[in-house]
Image (cartoon, rainbow, N blue to C red):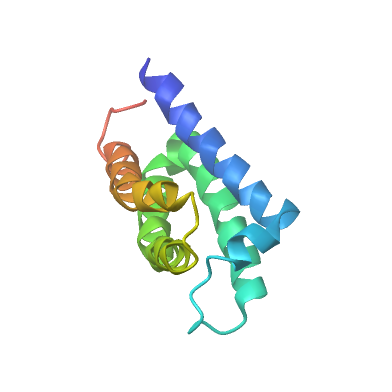
Length: 122
């Protein structure tokens, strides 16, 4: 079962990484306005998600892949905050989903942290 959840996490980040390239407008919509070069940042974050997911799936690089995913999740947290603020201001009916993403980010961080520990998914 431990391998199932490891590869599920890896697949999740591969999927979201690919979506950065296929549907960049979705990610541009939640990019904090104070960041320069938003489209380039969407592509960079998507490439990082893909690379880190691959590192997570490989036993020899799992530790580093997990830590890099944690750092990425921390780095993109302002986008989740921006999404919640924007949805609130627009009275978007999916505000609940934007608010759910905030604590979910901490769950994803915890999940990735599990793979920084030895023998979790060897």
